[in-house]
Length: 64
Image 1 (cartoon, rainbow, N blue to C red):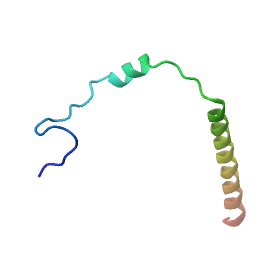
Image 2 (image 1 turned 45 degrees about the vertical axis):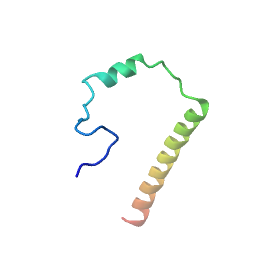
Image 3 (image 1 turned 90 degrees about the horizontal axis):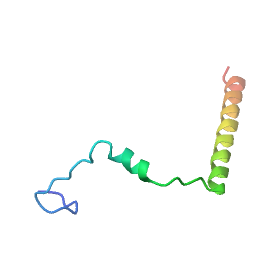
Image 4 (image 1 turned 45 degrees about the horizontal axis):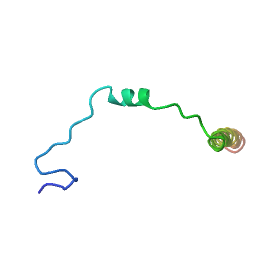
């Protein structure tokens, strides 16, 4: 029993040609990050660093 994947019966899906992803990325126009995206990245990095410091501090304080 074949699974229906939206392809005609008997037709196999072809893998993408080598290098096609790189070609597509080379053709894509440059899109700078939006200000809100920059803020989200910065906040994520700061939050991760602060939580790492808290984890290390609590590890040395309570589990030594």
